[in-house]
Image (cartoon, rainbow, N blue to C red; front, side, top):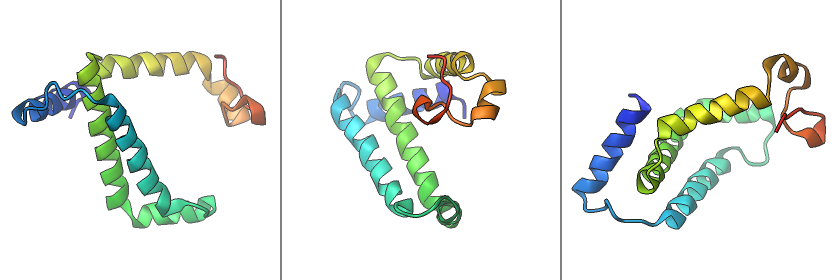
Length: 120
């Protein structure tokens, strides 16, 4: 499904339930944080190799997190009048300028505090 289609489906979902004007971005953002926290419990305090194994063994939970988070983000986009597809494209364009592949392959991270590069 394309982003535009997903955003429209969520809009129709909300309208069908009388939630079109249910404008509570604070709670939606808190819900995103909650979803992240639930998934963090899968991998907290374990090394990277173990994280990969745990995620691989719990794909359904990871998929659920991705779906829930996308739903909430697209709901926020609808409530604020943001075209999510356009917003994503603009972010990707910005990241292309900030983090050129030839540099990123050498430094590995955009975190300047640990030797990375970010042309922000």
